[in-house]
Length: 315
Image 1: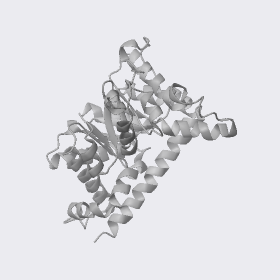
Image 2: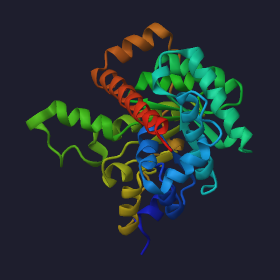
Image 3: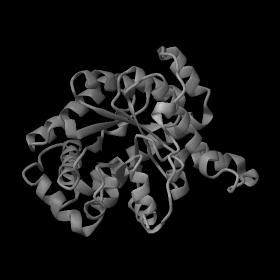
Image 4: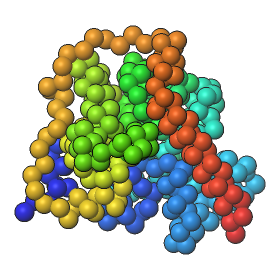
């Protein structure tokens, strides 16, 4: 009988959400996404110390931030040998409110990839979905540097990305779910809020239908899953980036996977016209999105600092 993972692949492109090369080699997804937290987790494993040492050999005189860029690209380049599609590499989260610095960092990361013989169309530069991050992505997209706008929790973030011509967005399912569950406290009913009723699933569904109904080419990639129910409830989304643990679980489950999202059936929607003031007000008016965006930036920044410390003492 067909596994649920194979059934999901009928409708959706599967992306591995990990920096673990061994897991990617085993799972063989089309694409892979990374972030500072995932690379930090991988870098702490003894089997990846030779990769770190080889990458930094001859570059010990560089600033730690420059060494970090080389490590991120080294992992990405290794990942691209294992997948047929693209890898996402994240810009330093500490630049999330600096348009110019984000653009320069993205250009530098792409230049490092190209120096290794990797074409830029195989790389997605991940940027936090702040107003400044979206403006940076708009410039980069015009230069042929494709972007993955991450830490996306709300409709105005998605609409601004689509309006800017961003290649791909990553609305977070699990973190939205986490916020609502915590806010509900003892009133939370797990059974009633599962599957299609999950608040994270509903957010991605509404974003998918808004962009597809408006005729925008921006790819929607659901991310940050807590359970397979969330994954299956978004079958038909352009892409889903899933942890190795959940991919393994899906591979053990059998049964049909009905299509939940279909771009061809999205209701028609008007063109997006979202000036900065409206974007900032709508985001500010959404407590969940405001809090989770800020929390995500802080967490990625903290893990970036931890990774830099590892590199600074590496033999």
